[in-house]
Amino acid sequence: MVHSFKYILIGGGVSAGYAAREFVKQGVHPGELAIISKEAVAPYERPALSKAYLFPESPARLPGFHTCVGSGGERLLPEWYSEKGIQLYLSTEIVSADLAAKFLKSANGEHFDYQTLVIATGSAVIRLTDFGVIGANAKNIFYLREVDDADKLYEAIKRKKNAKAVVVGGGYIGLELSAVLKLNDLDVTMVYPEPWCMPRLFTSEIAAFYEGYYANKGINIIKGTVAVGFTANSDGEVKEVKLKDGRVLEADIVIVGVGGRPQISLFKGQVEEQHGGIKTDSFFKTSVPDVYAVGDVATFPLKLYNDVRRVEHVDHARKSAEQAAKVIFAADVRKSVEEYDYLPYFYSRSFDLSWQFYGDNVGETVLFGDNDPASSKPKFGTYWIKEGKVVGAFLEGGTPDENKAIAKVARAKPAVEDVNQLAEEGLSFASKI
Image (cartoon, rainbow, N blue to C red; front, side, top):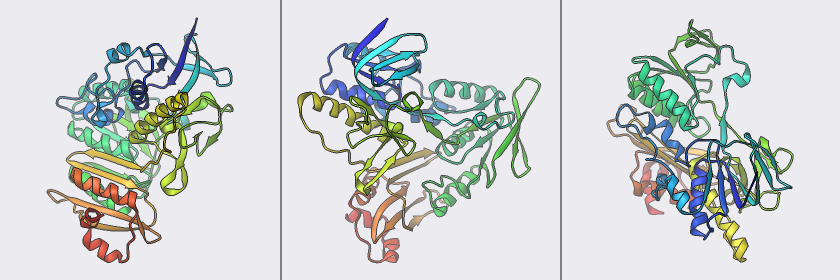
């Protein structure tokens, strides 16, 4: 049987929900749009999985965090899609795609054809088994990407009271999950090869604060080495993590967060690629007519820096999906849409901490504020300066207005004459822009 739709969106993550909402705003007719997702649930706000979903008290659960609540919008329950005439194909994995013929095939043999395709397949986690790490297939070694992953991890946390947990990786997932594991009263050790945490974004000074704060919470941090093997007990459950430097860590639970890869293998050889993703223009059009790519998989022009990048973050997943939906409908009625002019934005929350970053983290840096991990209410930030202009700004502990101020600075790229004066002014510099 062939299912035919005017528009098909492949992928059921954050982008799917925000695209669906924009399709409805633009006037999609019932029966025209289908969303095909290998997950069993309607699109949801994925960041909740590493935070509130694992809280020891009153954890978040669906339907509480379906899109689009993460940006303050309406929560789109499965019934909403039905009411709008949007067909959700859940637990449906597409295994082959022919972009020239505009044809998709699922694992269970269903066929789909379309007039316009939006690729929103997101990223897949990098697994240690991909590298042949010995023992990496033991039980209770977890990865976190989907609700099903979070459910399995949550069950293990509840089952293994006062357990020893080892978190492999010092990025987003590593930091957020180490915090939530500690909130669950686990004995937590972080292991990562870099000289400091979040090295793709943090300076050593920023990282020193978070490493100190986590250490004060009782989290053990081991830097400069990697996990090279695991041993298991007679039940096949992980019991030890072997490190490259020779140390062996006891472990009842291991969580691996070492990055992700854009899921574009279905389209290999059919569409132009760039920087590990699918190359698009500022309207998320690919090299193939009537095919768009959004979110993690899209490599797009970053107008603000005259650059081309691929961005893995929920904010871009939301906004790129909305942009593509607007462009698709504008083409139908011969209207124009402004180019995507994205300001890179990253954020995280853990314990009582909350930081935001806007812009580009290149050039020399200026640290300001109170970055003592022992402070009762730390508030500090960093500016990045390139060619005499502020191009990026980071703030821990900011109010909503202060966070808006650093975003404005990053967008405006104001000139800086004296970096020492900038350090003294700190946050007040942003407030003047």
